[in-house]
Image (tube, rainbow, N blue to C red; front, side, top):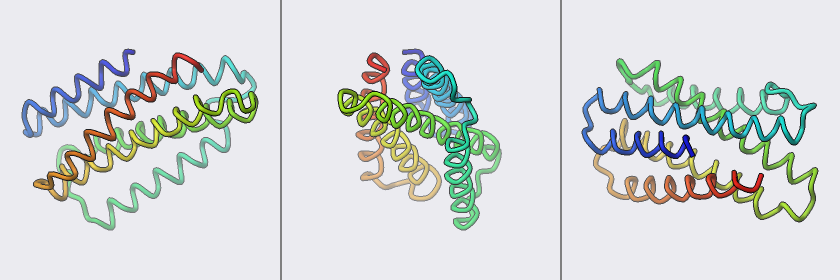
Length: 173
């Protein structure tokens, strides 16, 4: 629930102004929301699978692969983030870690519990994937194609769908 509230705060700040101060404040709000989701997923993982550490090898490998791919993409596209560089890198890392932890929770729960958990696990993974997609669309709109209306629609639809899916699954896992 707290993660949702930070998400709404980030939404508000991004819609107030496109100035760099509001962008950074929105980024920080979203970052805190991702940290809340990471904490929730990690706690659920620890409760259900106490033998699995936070830095499980598969999770760490997935994180490093996805984060490395994101960094390579930003280098290839020669993005100029200015003062936002460190917050963007930190935010990207937390977004990817949230996705990895949601995927780990969904896949481990699915493999341990069987077919009864399939819908909830798939909804959780889909929600995390949509969150990742929504933020990619937002980054493209913010830093590359500022006037693309379709990116705005895609971002909004995928973002709110992701928030709803993630919030609903946390009630069941």
